[in-house]
Length: 391
Image (cartoon, rainbow, N blue to C red):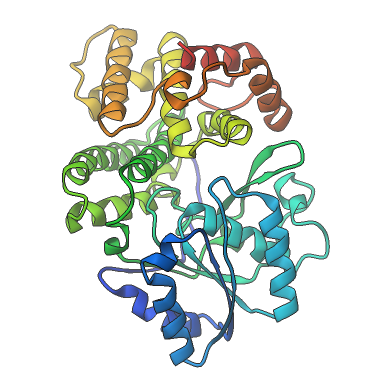
């Protein structure tokens, strides 16, 4: 196990009707004028936005709003939020929504106190040293952004989808997590979220770091819990227990717990970022296509941990043939993805003729000549993975 520092200071307020505590939490963490960030109409139709506005008003907390954040969030809304936040002198940002809304709020948070272009942080030109404080009211368990210091934004100029990772600066002060708010999520969105949280775990699980038994078992146990609850929520969308476990799993998947002591990989996420940047598909659905393709490539080139994954997560009988074990585990993973309505090929994703040349080009332009740690990908390897996804 590698040396590590684990820092996760977010206060999680979990359970029924916890959104009623939002104003109390904003005050606790120093907020007096709030920028509420939200997406489309669901938080309006459900009445959640009105309830949040009401508790803030009752507590004497002023607020302004930025709505219209779309999935695969892009830079124009970030610039709009930075300008609004500066003009209104806000001192706290409250995203009400899922990962896209939270990621946008984080980019705004580092952009407001910075004299340059917020995109400098995403391209590595500058490192954030401060940010406006953030609290979250979560509506979609998926990205885990409510517990992480990460943000992913697409710059429309060049369709560059890049991530910023600054846990010391960007972890939310609090996250309000009411599983009841997820009852009305469409089955597709629920399934995309399940796939995303599984991928977050697997990016950490597939490591060459030795003697990580505790971390491995946390990953495997959380994956098995997600698989179990995914089947329950498919049958009973309003099952509180299933929704609650999935909501907590999404946070666990991405706050660092599943990666302590390990060298992480992340090449599958970066491969998918190019797909969703170019074709604007749901991130979780894109991962459902890319991750099995990545695993299939690894079954041929670096099968050891994939065989362990197959045995411990998918109950594949152990044998001396690691490749065969790995391939059977991948088959069971793909069968599970199909069972919750996810695609596993480009064609099933709605991309009949993917421009693999473009995807490979952008992947290495954005991430370098060799990408990932479990088995670093050169352009030949990344092309093969995209081609496997196209079969």
